[in-house]
Length: 130
Image (cartoon, rainbow, N blue to C red; front, side, top):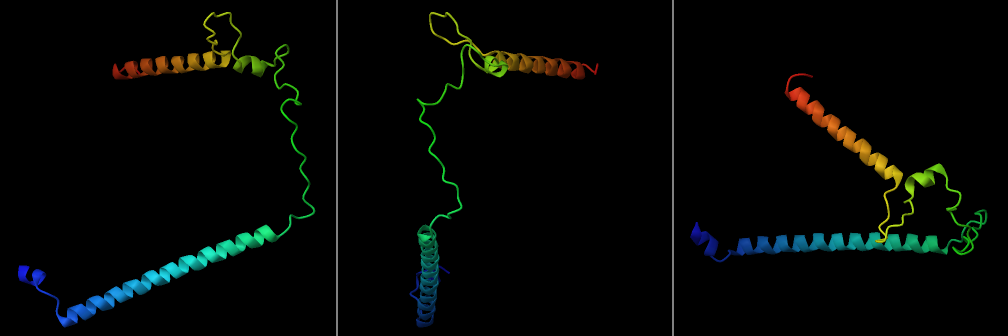
């Protein structure tokens, strides 16, 4: 068997190898041509879409006002309930570390209660009481 691996190809094997190589090259060429045709069609469609003018019935969007012309979103003197819940309260901390918003404190408290309740539930179920 080792002799068959190291022996030179016969004329029939060489002809078969060349035929298979030619077939492979033809398949690769056909695939390359198919990809090029697909790319050409995509570019044609893109160019055609770019040439068509925008429909006249489309409303013309006016530009958004500049940031300095807009009224402030948050009025610090008159906060809504939602704004008070999610905004950091002002503190007199010398390190300028902002305090936690009330909504974040409430969420942390709920998560801790659920975790403690889950721990109690697991302990009681392992003890056979639940």
